[in-house]
Image (cartoon, rainbow, N blue to C red; front, side):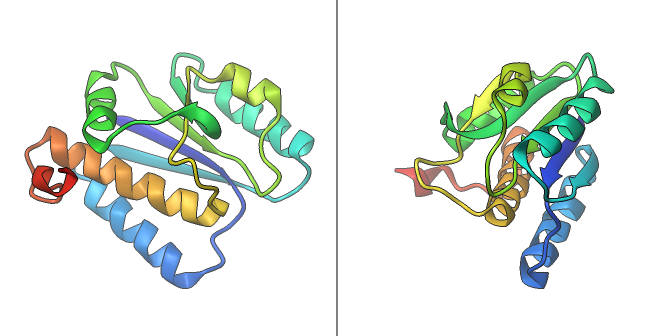
Length: 149
């Protein structure tokens, strides 16, 4: 599985960075992971860089994290990961959001929650859900199905 994560902004909180790095390490047996950090700027300038980065992965499935996107349970998200037959590119915008052009390029708009998160928290939640998803697919013990009931 090939996964690329395109994010606006650097992780400033060392504890969040540490947790993201830990999930990335846990993901490594299951997926090749790339990450591109884009400097904070205006949504228009950020989107220009994002669209350029996405264009390099023409055949990829682009999943943009957006509050108006579709919500999944962890098991549904795992199934989505398992069904992927090409590279997956996840995009997280900056504090001021993404332009309509980036959202229109998406194969899927995905909402982590009806709540609003900082882009740092969104990144941590993405990494955690990616690991949870591959753990579900491979029968790992990280996800406990009974905990959802």
